[in-house]
Amino acid sequence: MMGALATPSGAAWARPKRGAGTYALIGLLAAGCAAAAYAATQPASLPVGDKAAIEAVVRDYILEHPEIVREAMVKLETKRVASLVEANRSSLETPYAGAWEGAPKPDVTLVAFMDYACGYCRATVPTIARLIKEDPGLRVVYRELPIISEASVPAARVSLLAAESGRFAAFHAAMYAEDGVDNDTILDAAKKAGLDAAKVKAELANQARNPAFAQNIKLAQSLEAEGTPLLVVGDQVFYGAVSYETLKDAIDKARKPS
Image 1: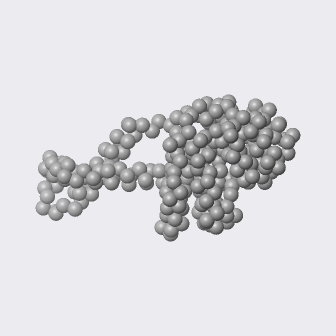
Image 2 (image 1 turned 180 degrees about the vertical axis):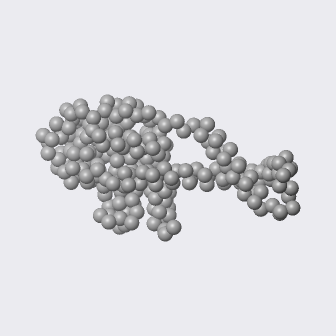
Image 3 (image 1 turned 180 degrees about the horizontal axis):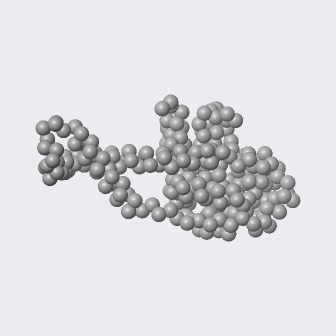
Protein backbone atom coordinates (compact mmCIF):
# COMPACT_ATOMS: atom_id res chain seq x y z
CA MET A 1 0.00 0.00 0.00
CA MET A 2 1.05 3.58 -0.62
CA GLY A 3 0.18 6.98 0.80
CA ALA A 4 -2.51 8.83 -1.15
CA LEU A 5 -1.45 11.91 -3.07
CA ALA A 6 -2.32 15.57 -2.81
CA THR A 7 -0.55 18.66 -4.17
CA PRO A 8 0.74 20.65 -1.21
CA SER A 9 2.22 24.11 -1.47
CA GLY A 10 5.79 24.07 -2.72
CA ALA A 11 5.64 20.56 -4.18
CA ALA A 12 4.32 20.16 -7.70
CA TRP A 13 3.40 16.55 -8.43
CA ALA A 14 2.04 14.89 -11.54
CA ARG A 15 1.10 11.22 -11.57
CA PRO A 16 3.23 9.16 -13.96
CA LYS A 17 1.27 7.62 -16.81
CA ARG A 18 1.92 3.96 -16.10
CA GLY A 19 -1.37 2.28 -16.88
CA ALA A 20 -2.95 -0.53 -18.84
CA GLY A 21 -1.47 0.67 -22.12
CA THR A 22 2.05 0.31 -20.80
CA TYR A 23 1.46 -3.21 -19.58
CA ALA A 24 -0.34 -4.17 -22.78
CA LEU A 25 2.73 -3.08 -24.73
CA ILE A 26 4.95 -5.06 -22.37
CA GLY A 27 2.68 -8.05 -22.95
CA LEU A 28 3.02 -7.77 -26.71
CA LEU A 29 6.79 -7.47 -26.42
CA ALA A 30 6.84 -10.44 -24.09
CA ALA A 31 4.86 -12.54 -26.53
CA GLY A 32 7.27 -11.53 -29.26
CA CYS A 33 10.22 -12.55 -27.10
CA ALA A 34 8.56 -15.86 -26.33
CA ALA A 35 7.91 -16.45 -30.02
CA ALA A 36 11.50 -15.62 -30.93
CA ALA A 37 12.82 -17.88 -28.21
CA TYR A 38 10.64 -20.72 -29.40
CA ALA A 39 11.52 -20.24 -33.05
CA ALA A 40 15.22 -20.34 -32.20
CA THR A 41 14.79 -23.83 -30.76
CA GLN A 42 13.16 -25.27 -33.88
CA PRO A 43 15.02 -27.55 -36.30
CA ALA A 44 16.43 -26.14 -39.52
CA SER A 45 13.89 -28.20 -41.47
CA LEU A 46 11.14 -25.72 -40.51
CA PRO A 47 10.23 -23.79 -43.70
CA VAL A 48 11.75 -20.37 -43.02
CA GLY A 49 9.77 -18.70 -45.76
CA ASP A 50 6.44 -20.01 -44.60
CA LYS A 51 5.39 -17.19 -42.27
CA ALA A 52 1.90 -18.57 -41.71
CA ALA A 53 3.26 -21.95 -40.67
CA ILE A 54 5.71 -20.40 -38.22
CA GLU A 55 3.02 -18.17 -36.72
CA ALA A 56 0.67 -21.11 -36.30
CA VAL A 57 3.32 -23.19 -34.55
CA VAL A 58 4.27 -20.32 -32.24
CA ARG A 59 0.62 -19.56 -31.46
CA ASP A 60 -0.06 -23.18 -30.58
CA TYR A 61 3.02 -23.33 -28.39
CA ILE A 62 2.06 -20.17 -26.47
CA LEU A 63 -1.50 -21.42 -25.99
CA GLU A 64 -0.13 -24.68 -24.62
CA HIS A 65 2.42 -22.86 -22.41
CA PRO A 66 0.87 -19.48 -21.48
CA GLU A 67 3.17 -19.21 -18.47
CA ILE A 68 6.07 -18.26 -20.75
CA VAL A 69 4.35 -14.98 -21.61
CA ARG A 70 4.06 -14.11 -17.94
CA GLU A 71 7.68 -15.09 -17.37
CA ALA A 72 8.79 -12.93 -20.29
CA MET A 73 6.73 -9.99 -19.03
CA VAL A 74 8.30 -10.22 -15.58
CA LYS A 75 11.78 -10.41 -17.08
CA LEU A 76 11.17 -7.43 -19.36
CA GLU A 77 9.72 -5.33 -16.53
CA THR A 78 12.61 -6.23 -14.24
CA LYS A 79 15.12 -5.13 -16.88
CA ARG A 80 13.17 -1.95 -17.58
CA VAL A 81 13.05 -0.92 -13.92
CA ALA A 82 16.73 -1.77 -13.47
CA SER A 83 17.60 0.53 -16.37
CA LEU A 84 15.62 3.36 -14.75
CA VAL A 85 17.50 2.90 -11.49
CA GLU A 86 20.90 2.70 -13.17
CA ALA A 87 20.25 5.90 -15.12
CA ASN A 88 19.63 7.74 -11.84
CA ARG A 89 21.81 5.80 -9.39
CA SER A 90 24.31 8.54 -8.58
CA SER A 91 21.58 11.10 -7.85
CA LEU A 92 19.55 8.57 -5.87
CA GLU A 93 22.37 7.40 -3.62
CA THR A 94 23.95 10.81 -2.96
CA PRO A 95 22.32 12.10 0.25
CA TYR A 96 21.28 15.64 1.05
CA ALA A 97 23.81 16.70 3.69
CA GLY A 98 23.39 14.28 6.62
CA ALA A 99 20.07 12.76 5.55
CA TRP A 100 21.24 9.19 5.95
CA GLU A 101 21.77 6.47 8.54
CA GLY A 102 23.92 3.38 8.75
CA ALA A 103 27.31 2.61 7.27
CA PRO A 104 29.66 5.53 6.48
CA LYS A 105 31.23 3.36 3.74
CA PRO A 106 28.40 1.07 2.61
CA ASP A 107 28.48 -1.86 0.25
CA VAL A 108 24.71 -1.56 -0.25
CA THR A 109 22.53 1.54 -0.21
CA LEU A 110 18.79 1.60 0.36
CA VAL A 111 17.10 4.81 -0.83
CA ALA A 112 13.85 5.72 0.94
CA PHE A 113 11.51 8.41 -0.40
CA MET A 114 9.21 9.29 2.51
CA ASP A 115 6.60 11.78 3.71
CA TYR A 116 6.05 12.46 7.42
CA ALA A 117 2.29 12.55 6.83
CA CYS A 118 2.34 9.07 5.26
CA GLY A 119 1.02 6.26 7.45
CA TYR A 120 2.71 3.58 5.35
CA CYS A 121 6.03 5.42 5.72
CA ARG A 122 5.51 5.41 9.47
CA ALA A 123 4.88 1.65 9.34
CA THR A 124 8.13 1.19 7.39
CA VAL A 125 10.31 3.00 9.96
CA PRO A 126 10.74 0.01 12.35
CA THR A 127 11.62 -2.27 9.42
CA ILE A 128 14.34 0.09 8.19
CA ALA A 129 15.64 0.56 11.74
CA ARG A 130 15.95 -3.21 12.15
CA LEU A 131 17.82 -3.55 8.86
CA ILE A 132 20.28 -0.81 9.86
CA LYS A 133 20.86 -2.43 13.26
CA GLU A 134 21.47 -5.89 11.82
CA ASP A 135 23.53 -4.93 8.75
CA PRO A 136 26.81 -3.02 9.32
CA GLY A 137 27.34 -2.63 5.57
CA LEU A 138 23.99 -0.97 4.84
CA ARG A 139 23.40 2.73 4.38
CA VAL A 140 19.90 4.22 4.13
CA VAL A 141 19.61 7.49 2.21
CA TYR A 142 16.40 9.38 2.96
CA ARG A 143 14.79 11.62 0.35
CA GLU A 144 12.01 13.95 1.44
CA LEU A 145 8.94 13.68 -0.79
CA PRO A 146 6.34 16.04 0.76
CA ILE A 147 3.36 15.30 -1.47
CA ILE A 148 0.53 14.12 0.78
CA SER A 149 -0.61 17.16 2.74
CA GLU A 150 0.10 20.84 3.37
CA ALA A 151 1.79 19.88 6.65
CA SER A 152 4.20 17.59 4.80
CA VAL A 153 6.16 20.56 3.46
CA PRO A 154 7.20 22.29 6.72
CA ALA A 155 8.03 18.91 8.26
CA ALA A 156 10.29 18.15 5.31
CA ARG A 157 11.90 21.60 5.54
CA VAL A 158 12.82 21.04 9.17
CA SER A 159 14.06 17.56 8.29
CA LEU A 160 16.52 19.09 5.81
CA LEU A 161 17.55 21.61 8.47
CA ALA A 162 18.22 18.67 10.77
CA ALA A 163 20.28 17.02 8.03
CA GLU A 164 22.36 20.19 7.69
CA SER A 165 22.79 20.31 11.47
CA GLY A 166 23.89 16.71 11.91
CA ARG A 167 20.65 15.89 13.75
CA PHE A 168 18.72 14.14 11.00
CA ALA A 169 18.38 10.71 12.62
CA ALA A 170 17.15 12.24 15.88
CA PHE A 171 14.54 14.42 14.17
CA HIS A 172 13.47 11.63 11.82
CA ALA A 173 12.76 9.28 14.72
CA ALA A 174 11.10 11.97 16.84
CA MET A 175 8.86 13.16 14.00
CA TYR A 176 7.57 9.69 13.20
CA ALA A 177 6.94 9.13 16.91
CA GLU A 178 4.60 12.14 16.99
CA ASP A 179 0.84 11.75 16.72
CA GLY A 180 0.27 13.48 13.39
CA VAL A 181 1.98 16.31 11.54
CA ASP A 182 1.39 20.01 12.25
CA ASN A 183 3.46 22.94 13.47
CA ASP A 184 3.13 21.88 17.10
CA THR A 185 4.33 18.31 16.51
CA ILE A 186 7.13 19.55 14.24
CA LEU A 187 8.31 21.96 16.94
CA ASP A 188 8.12 19.22 19.56
CA ALA A 189 10.13 16.79 17.43
CA ALA A 190 12.69 19.49 16.64
CA LYS A 191 13.10 20.24 20.34
CA LYS A 192 13.62 16.56 21.14
CA ALA A 193 16.20 16.38 18.35
CA GLY A 194 18.11 19.33 19.77
CA LEU A 195 17.58 21.70 16.84
CA ASP A 196 17.95 25.46 17.13
CA ALA A 197 14.46 26.79 17.91
CA ALA A 198 14.92 30.06 16.02
CA LYS A 199 16.06 28.26 12.87
CA VAL A 200 13.15 25.83 13.11
CA LYS A 201 10.61 28.65 13.37
CA ALA A 202 12.24 30.37 10.39
CA GLU A 203 11.82 27.20 8.32
CA LEU A 204 8.18 26.90 9.36
CA ALA A 205 7.58 30.47 8.15
CA ASN A 206 9.55 30.00 4.92
CA GLN A 207 7.32 29.90 1.83
CA ALA A 208 10.05 29.59 -0.80
CA ARG A 209 10.35 26.35 -2.73
CA ASN A 210 13.26 24.18 -1.70
CA PRO A 211 15.26 22.89 -4.69
CA ALA A 212 15.79 19.58 -2.90
CA PHE A 213 12.06 18.85 -3.07
CA ALA A 214 11.97 19.46 -6.81
CA GLN A 215 14.95 17.16 -7.30
CA ASN A 216 13.35 14.40 -5.23
CA ILE A 217 10.05 14.71 -7.07
CA LYS A 218 11.87 14.49 -10.40
CA LEU A 219 13.75 11.39 -9.24
CA ALA A 220 10.60 9.73 -7.92
CA GLN A 221 8.75 10.41 -11.15
CA SER A 222 11.65 9.02 -13.18
CA LEU A 223 11.03 5.77 -11.27
CA GLU A 224 7.29 6.01 -11.97
CA ALA A 225 6.31 6.43 -8.33
CA GLU A 226 2.67 7.06 -7.52
CA GLY A 227 3.07 7.80 -3.82
CA THR A 228 5.10 7.07 -0.73
CA PRO A 229 7.03 5.22 0.49
CA LEU A 230 9.24 4.52 -2.51
CA LEU A 231 12.19 2.23 -1.74
CA VAL A 232 15.15 1.49 -3.99
CA VAL A 233 17.68 -1.29 -3.33
CA GLY A 234 20.20 -2.41 -5.91
CA ASP A 235 18.27 -2.65 -9.18
CA GLN A 236 14.89 -3.14 -7.50
CA VAL A 237 12.17 -0.60 -6.79
CA PHE A 238 9.40 -1.14 -4.25
CA TYR A 239 6.26 0.98 -4.37
CA GLY A 240 4.60 1.18 -0.96
CA ALA A 241 5.19 -0.52 2.37
CA VAL A 242 7.01 -3.85 2.11
CA SER A 243 8.04 -6.50 4.60
CA TYR A 244 11.36 -6.91 6.37
CA GLU A 245 11.91 -10.19 4.53
CA THR A 246 11.38 -8.58 1.12
CA LEU A 247 13.86 -5.78 1.80
CA LYS A 248 16.38 -8.16 3.37
CA ASP A 249 16.22 -10.36 0.28
CA ALA A 250 16.69 -7.32 -1.99
CA ILE A 251 19.72 -6.20 0.04
CA ASP A 252 21.25 -9.68 -0.17
CA LYS A 253 20.71 -9.76 -3.94
CA ALA A 254 22.24 -6.30 -4.34
CA ARG A 255 25.29 -7.43 -2.39
CA LYS A 256 25.94 -10.55 -4.47
CA PRO A 257 28.53 -10.05 -7.25
CA SER A 258 26.97 -10.00 -10.70
